[in-house]
Amino acid sequence: MVYWEDFKVKDSVAKHLIIISFDAVTSNDYEVLMGLSNFSHCMMEGSFVKKVNTVYPSLTYPAHTTIITGNYPKKHGIVNNTLTQPGKESPDWYWNRKHIKCKTLYDLAKENNLTVASLLWPVTAKAKIKYNMPEIFPNKKFENQVMVSLVNGSPYYQLELNSKFGKIRNGLKQPELDNFILASAIYTLKTYKPNLTLIHFTDVDSMRHQYGTNSKESMKALLRHDGRLGELLNALKEADMYKDSNIVLLGDHGFLDGNKMICLNSLFRENNLITLDDKGKIKDWKAYMKSCDGSAYIYLKDNKDRETLKVLQKLLYPLKEKSKHGIEEILTGKDAGKLGADENCAFMLEACEGFYFVEDHDGDIIKNVDDKDIGVKKHHTRGTHGYSPKKASLETFFIALGKNIKKGTIVNSINLVDEGPTFAKLLGLTMKNVDGKVIKSILE
View (spheres, rainbow, N blue to C red):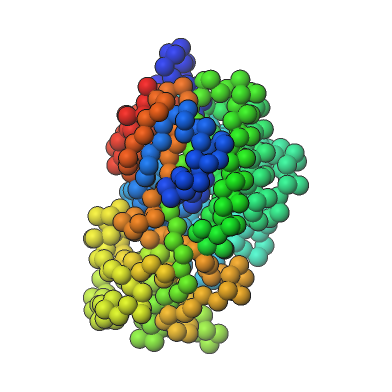
């Protein structure tokens, strides 16, 4: 085990690593970012990657867990945003650290006596992080936001932040939520000066879901992010941390617009693979389509049920031949595993551009997205992600600057799994048994 005291005397290792995730900011946004003062400053002062290949499915929770483990979803276990809970109107998310099957960057840091702060980083509920405000929300009638957060994170730390900045928040609405996280992050950096800080902003993701990928609302959110970035950079300088820090700005996935929803559970219900009770709720199931938005898993309740598997084959493959049903590709579980997704599924389906999957089990198989339902009904959005990383526009971005980062290096392409091992290296540590590799070309 390597302790901070063992290597802090080495001038080559910066004392602080600040990782700032701008959810849903993509490689296509570079043209805009280059015109923004703070993002362009970071690009000129450090290195950046033109395109970062994300994971499959290209969702926030699988991607963020890949970022801090260096592994693909099938290995780290976060194979979707939400758990498979057929019939539950609002499935629970993979909020908890216990769902991750391998070591994380913050685990490694803690083992080596480094202090860690995390602000709304996904899958950190009940993680052993000293300053932890996990991303989690109440999903039961008797729960409320304050108690759920306190129980699953660092209670005294969160009470401190809420007492100082709680008035900024407006529930989960943007841009207030990111403004609250910004104020909390600045206070945390100045007050506690963690060795590793993880910050997750979701303003752009929210705007792109509700208004579309290239909407004016999304562009305004990018402008707000530039302002937030500037405030964080100033805070590091005011705290006398800037010169002894490495700063990374990154995204998790790209984005595509869509206006048609694929509801395969309706088809499964019609063919007796899903049965309902008298209230129209799922009572039992043999096969279930679990949405990843731009892609979907098909699970068997009993993996040995060969009869249901044959029924699925007869139902699904003809749909692929008809473009109106929006299915671009059908993968077996084994093939999905080769792409880093959940190999325990019976099938994984990829939607055509313009389509995405929802878990409705009533009505038509294909439903049009109605503008009046955007922001009102669950899963009704103008833009989404979750598609295969092979699709154009799914790549994300990566900018790094600081004590151990070369200035002026431009890398054409990396994989999201390469980020975790690189972050460990920047902390003077080594991440073992991972799918990714260190991005050596950007390091001094």
